[in-house]
Image (cartoon, rainbow, N blue to C red):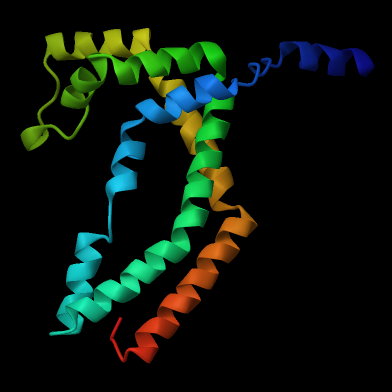
Length: 183
Protein backbone atom coordinates (compact mmCIF):
# COMPACT_ATOMS: atom_id res chain seq x y z
CA UNK A 1 0.00 0.00 0.00
CA UNK A 2 2.70 2.61 0.84
CA UNK A 3 4.32 2.01 -2.54
CA UNK A 4 1.08 2.85 -4.36
CA UNK A 5 0.78 6.11 -2.41
CA UNK A 6 4.34 6.99 -3.32
CA UNK A 7 3.63 6.29 -6.99
CA UNK A 8 0.52 8.49 -6.85
CA UNK A 9 2.51 11.31 -5.27
CA UNK A 10 5.19 11.03 -7.93
CA UNK A 11 2.61 10.98 -10.72
CA UNK A 12 0.78 14.08 -9.43
CA UNK A 13 1.93 17.27 -11.15
CA UNK A 14 4.05 19.43 -8.91
CA UNK A 15 2.72 22.85 -8.07
CA UNK A 16 4.78 25.66 -9.54
CA UNK A 17 6.83 27.76 -7.13
CA UNK A 18 5.09 30.84 -5.75
CA UNK A 19 5.29 34.04 -7.74
CA UNK A 20 7.49 36.78 -6.26
CA UNK A 21 5.86 40.09 -5.28
CA UNK A 22 7.52 42.22 -7.98
CA UNK A 23 6.32 39.86 -10.72
CA UNK A 24 2.83 39.78 -9.19
CA UNK A 25 2.65 43.59 -9.05
CA UNK A 26 3.75 43.75 -12.71
CA UNK A 27 0.96 41.31 -13.57
CA UNK A 28 -1.60 43.49 -11.75
CA UNK A 29 -0.45 46.58 -13.65
CA UNK A 30 -0.95 44.99 -17.07
CA UNK A 31 -4.38 43.47 -16.45
CA UNK A 32 -6.88 45.52 -18.48
CA UNK A 33 -9.83 44.84 -16.16
CA UNK A 34 -7.93 46.27 -13.20
CA UNK A 35 -7.43 49.57 -15.01
CA UNK A 36 -11.13 49.80 -15.92
CA UNK A 37 -12.43 48.73 -12.49
CA UNK A 38 -10.55 51.53 -10.72
CA UNK A 39 -12.26 54.13 -12.93
CA UNK A 40 -15.77 52.71 -12.77
CA UNK A 41 -18.72 54.15 -10.85
CA UNK A 42 -22.17 52.77 -10.19
CA UNK A 43 -23.55 50.35 -12.73
CA UNK A 44 -25.36 52.55 -15.30
CA UNK A 45 -28.15 50.00 -15.80
CA UNK A 46 -28.78 49.78 -12.05
CA UNK A 47 -28.75 53.55 -11.70
CA UNK A 48 -31.21 53.94 -14.59
CA UNK A 49 -33.51 51.28 -13.12
CA UNK A 50 -33.54 52.90 -9.69
CA UNK A 51 -34.02 56.42 -11.07
CA UNK A 52 -36.98 55.15 -13.07
CA UNK A 53 -38.48 53.74 -9.86
CA UNK A 54 -37.81 57.04 -8.05
CA UNK A 55 -38.56 59.88 -10.51
CA UNK A 56 -37.03 63.22 -9.55
CA UNK A 57 -34.81 61.59 -6.91
CA UNK A 58 -31.72 60.86 -8.98
CA UNK A 59 -29.39 62.63 -6.53
CA UNK A 60 -30.79 60.62 -3.60
CA UNK A 61 -30.36 57.36 -5.51
CA UNK A 62 -26.82 58.32 -6.51
CA UNK A 63 -25.97 59.10 -2.87
CA UNK A 64 -27.13 55.68 -1.69
CA UNK A 65 -25.26 53.93 -4.50
CA UNK A 66 -22.11 55.93 -3.75
CA UNK A 67 -22.31 54.97 -0.05
CA UNK A 68 -22.83 51.33 -1.05
CA UNK A 69 -19.81 51.48 -3.38
CA UNK A 70 -17.67 52.93 -0.56
CA UNK A 71 -18.87 50.16 1.75
CA UNK A 72 -18.29 47.27 -0.64
CA UNK A 73 -15.05 48.55 -2.20
CA UNK A 74 -12.63 47.20 0.45
CA UNK A 75 -14.16 43.70 0.37
CA UNK A 76 -14.34 43.65 -3.43
CA UNK A 77 -10.79 44.91 -3.82
CA UNK A 78 -9.44 42.42 -1.28
CA UNK A 79 -11.32 39.59 -2.98
CA UNK A 80 -10.04 40.56 -6.42
CA UNK A 81 -6.50 40.85 -5.09
CA UNK A 82 -6.72 37.41 -3.43
CA UNK A 83 -8.14 35.96 -6.65
CA UNK A 84 -5.34 37.52 -8.73
CA UNK A 85 -2.69 36.28 -6.29
CA UNK A 86 -4.14 32.75 -6.27
CA UNK A 87 -4.32 32.78 -10.08
CA UNK A 88 -0.71 33.95 -10.37
CA UNK A 89 0.48 31.29 -7.93
CA UNK A 90 -1.48 28.58 -9.76
CA UNK A 91 0.22 29.61 -13.01
CA UNK A 92 3.70 29.93 -11.56
CA UNK A 93 6.43 32.36 -12.63
CA UNK A 94 7.05 30.98 -16.13
CA UNK A 95 3.44 30.94 -17.32
CA UNK A 96 2.72 34.23 -15.54
CA UNK A 97 5.57 35.84 -17.48
CA UNK A 98 3.94 34.60 -20.71
CA UNK A 99 0.61 36.13 -19.63
CA UNK A 100 2.34 39.43 -18.84
CA UNK A 101 3.89 39.37 -22.32
CA UNK A 102 0.44 38.67 -23.77
CA UNK A 103 -1.16 41.62 -21.98
CA UNK A 104 1.72 43.97 -22.79
CA UNK A 105 2.06 43.04 -26.43
CA UNK A 106 -0.01 43.32 -29.61
CA UNK A 107 -1.48 39.81 -29.33
CA UNK A 108 -4.10 40.87 -26.77
CA UNK A 109 -5.81 43.11 -29.34
CA UNK A 110 -5.59 40.38 -31.96
CA UNK A 111 -7.05 37.82 -29.55
CA UNK A 112 -9.90 40.18 -28.62
CA UNK A 113 -10.68 40.69 -32.30
CA UNK A 114 -10.90 36.93 -32.84
CA UNK A 115 -12.70 35.75 -29.72
CA UNK A 116 -15.71 37.95 -28.93
CA UNK A 117 -19.10 37.00 -30.35
CA UNK A 118 -18.90 36.88 -34.09
CA UNK A 119 -21.39 39.13 -35.96
CA UNK A 120 -24.29 37.01 -37.15
CA UNK A 121 -22.78 33.95 -35.51
CA UNK A 122 -20.07 33.70 -38.17
CA UNK A 123 -17.39 31.10 -37.66
CA UNK A 124 -13.73 32.01 -37.89
CA UNK A 125 -12.18 31.81 -41.33
CA UNK A 126 -9.36 29.30 -41.81
CA UNK A 127 -6.80 32.12 -41.48
CA UNK A 128 -8.46 33.47 -38.32
CA UNK A 129 -8.60 29.98 -36.81
CA UNK A 130 -4.92 29.51 -37.59
CA UNK A 131 -4.15 32.83 -35.88
CA UNK A 132 -6.22 31.84 -32.83
CA UNK A 133 -4.45 28.48 -32.68
CA UNK A 134 -1.09 30.30 -32.83
CA UNK A 135 -2.10 32.52 -29.91
CA UNK A 136 -3.35 29.57 -27.87
CA UNK A 137 -0.04 27.80 -28.49
CA UNK A 138 2.07 30.86 -27.68
CA UNK A 139 0.40 31.81 -24.40
CA UNK A 140 -1.06 29.77 -21.53
CA UNK A 141 -4.53 31.22 -22.10
CA UNK A 142 -6.42 28.04 -21.24
CA UNK A 143 -4.37 27.51 -18.08
CA UNK A 144 -5.01 31.15 -17.17
CA UNK A 145 -8.77 30.72 -17.61
CA UNK A 146 -8.73 27.54 -15.52
CA UNK A 147 -6.67 29.21 -12.79
CA UNK A 148 -9.02 32.22 -12.76
CA UNK A 149 -12.03 29.91 -12.45
CA UNK A 150 -10.52 27.94 -9.58
CA UNK A 151 -9.39 31.11 -7.81
CA UNK A 152 -12.75 32.80 -8.32
CA UNK A 153 -14.57 29.84 -6.84
CA UNK A 154 -12.42 30.10 -3.72
CA UNK A 155 -13.03 33.84 -3.37
CA UNK A 156 -16.80 33.57 -3.75
CA UNK A 157 -16.96 31.06 -0.91
CA UNK A 158 -14.82 33.22 1.39
CA UNK A 159 -16.90 33.81 4.53
CA UNK A 160 -15.21 37.10 5.42
CA UNK A 161 -15.98 38.57 1.99
CA UNK A 162 -19.55 37.31 2.19
CA UNK A 163 -20.03 38.78 5.65
CA UNK A 164 -18.65 42.17 4.61
CA UNK A 165 -20.84 42.29 1.51
CA UNK A 166 -23.91 41.20 3.51
CA UNK A 167 -23.26 44.01 6.02
CA UNK A 168 -23.11 46.49 3.12
CA UNK A 169 -26.30 45.08 1.60
CA UNK A 170 -28.07 45.61 4.93
CA UNK A 171 -26.77 49.18 5.12
CA UNK A 172 -27.93 49.82 1.55
CA UNK A 173 -31.43 48.52 2.29
CA UNK A 174 -31.58 50.68 5.41
CA UNK A 175 -30.45 53.74 3.43
CA UNK A 176 -33.13 53.18 0.78
CA UNK A 177 -35.73 52.78 3.52
CA UNK A 178 -34.59 55.92 5.40
CA UNK A 179 -34.69 57.94 2.18
CA UNK A 180 -38.08 56.40 1.29
CA UNK A 181 -36.69 55.20 -2.03
CA UNK A 182 -37.94 52.18 -3.92
CA UNK A 183 -35.45 49.51 -4.77
